[in-house]
Length: 492
Image (cartoon, rainbow, N blue to C red):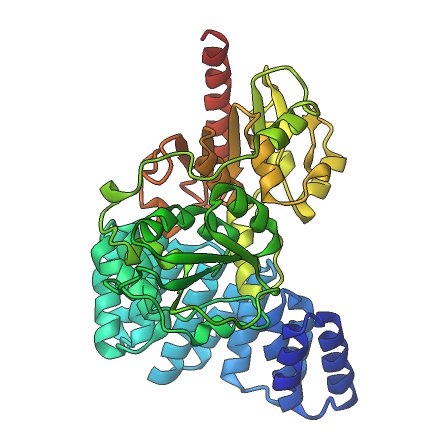
């Protein structure tokens, strides 16, 4: 069941996988292992929490005292939005299951669940209470580190990760959390090497280049072919691709491998480099090394934030394309681009992150309007549909004419400011040199540090940091700042 379900999802046949799992489990309701396997696949691959909870309920009908399944059901309830219901189930488990091992397991899953849904303070409270009398495991200690990191207390978090790694130095999740927290704390020299050893996240049906030697610091690249491949999200590629000139200056022959939305943008920004599309790049000779693009700062030796390459822009809009979009946009200025949500992905872990970083057009629009400016939507994907229900100040939406990120860059070239949650247009605006205001979630990503309203990655960026799970206060701050910005813009 698990292998077949995962294979269907990997082949892009998610609906077929769901149908298969539901058909098999519904015919064999008395086989709790099948229901559990189906729940496992669906929970990892989707955010269909209602289906997962139904399958787990069937498991518990047959295995009522299965603690792990009870804990997973509580976690699923919280992920699906019933935080109070899931919390109550966890509290009930803590009262009923009193052995040291049981308490540890419940505490680990309970804290993970609160972290997933954006409550790091509650997670930290649970963990510290447990540690007053309970056993300290690597997972418990690592979760304390994660909780403190999510609370933007990275310096305090680091010793907890170190204690966790002293118990289990091989745990990949703890190592990655420690690496990201080191970087967030500004200790790049210690963070980059650990970050480079992470388990890679590559969405390519034929990643043959992963069999090539991984490029390491100090490797001789003169005359050598190197595949720089997209790993993680579009924003990571847009942020770290700036280091390509360092490899070219050392004589490397570089091929950039990215998804279709980035191919044209990379081609026009790096005309001397070969740019290929993921999924259309079969095995080829002539390559000595491969490297995930987010590891470029480590490879070129950027060991402090002061060493971030200064030249902006490093990505470029095509002038003809920018002129084409200029003719389509309202003439009135200033023009301000808005992005209120990240891409709607499907895997549960990605969905939970997106829920923490995204707001709505209704919430952002209410905060920034009315304003004496032309508002432009740069929103992509499913959340763009919210425009149909927007009844506030006029919002121009040119995204229907956008084919890829090169077109988005051409629109941004005609804007005076971009306001966005933490998603790829933030990086695109910063990379092409457009002033950008980023609205950061409470548990700020490691690349933005713990505090401050500026980022060394993008000189024209202003960071607005949410200090609580609610978006209300930080959006109000953005709205007040925008009205002040427009007033000063008109006086220039």
